[in-house]
Image 1 (cartoon, helix red, strand yellow):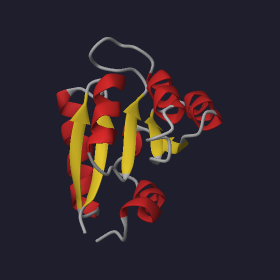
Image 2 (cartoon, rainbow, N blue to C red):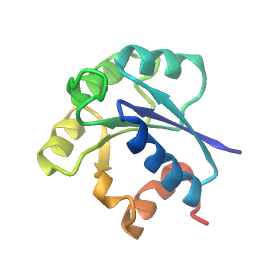
Image 3 (cartoon, rainbow, N blue to C red):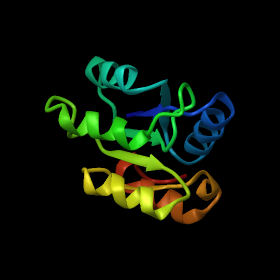
Image 4 (cartoon, rainbow, N blue to C red):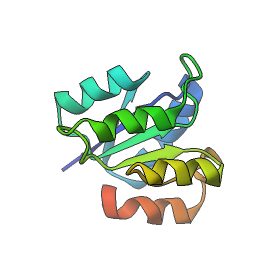
Length: 126
């Protein structure tokens, strides 16, 4: 069955890169949300297997960790696996402290380790 990934806060080109990367390695559909309200609505609107949140949201440059905080505070959707997309370890640490899984950076999209990291959530790589 096709997995569903919600990409939150990435600009068009970055969303396209993430979508291409995921489609190349996993059988998944990638949805897009601009911020916390869109993300929560999408999570409540249907099953999402993974939420990827940009460190700084494209629409207003607000903090992606705050989006994760809102997701994890909502009892009905807090179970959704969530990762921060950033190249900075300190931001990964902050996200993990509030319930996110360790994420990855956009610079890591081409790395086999990123595929391995996502396999337990999205299934076997091709």
